[in-house]
Image (tube, rainbow, N blue to C red):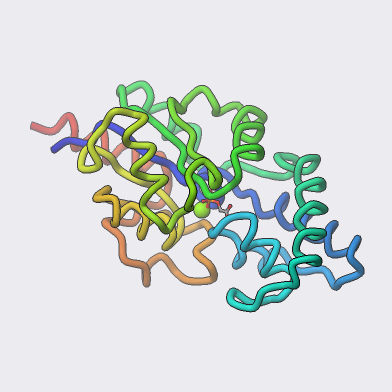
Length: 226
Ligand SMILES: O=C(O)COP(=O)(O)O
Ligand SMILES: [Mg+2]
């Protein structure tokens, strides 16, 4: 079955957002009188949504939870900072704009499936000038659960009106490949994003592409080949 729709992860796939995410995390940590973190450390905490990012920035751990009071204060503070910072220092990876334009022109249906909350996703897509490419945007709080659960991927397919097997997910992390795989959607990964500190070469997926432009060329090639 040929691919008719492409679902894109956002952070680490379309945009290098860690400079903004880290600036908001560090502004929050300063306000709370805690030591700041490097961008490299914050990058490892990105991928499972804002709640995980804020909690791990406080505890340094995936499993250890901050107290409910501290977490609530930190989350409200981080959201406030990120609202103002979101998009200020985020940059496109090479080939993203070229790839999106190629796919759109070739008639693919395009969507974003991100773990970033909707209230930050829409302004970022608008601000960076790529919102118009996407028929559907599923954020980290659109469904009751986030990637790596398949639900956001299934939701995007339903809204686009495509079967999972006619859809391709392109992401940067194990959260994308697990979600897509469980939804019956093939997944290609990019090597340049945030995979929780791991190489994508160690991550189960259906292919690795260097850029979105390369992914677009491959997809268009398979569609037009006899
Ligand atoms: O918000 C996150 O943790 C990561 O977002 P992503 O799903 O676009 O990579
Ligand atoms: Mg990502």
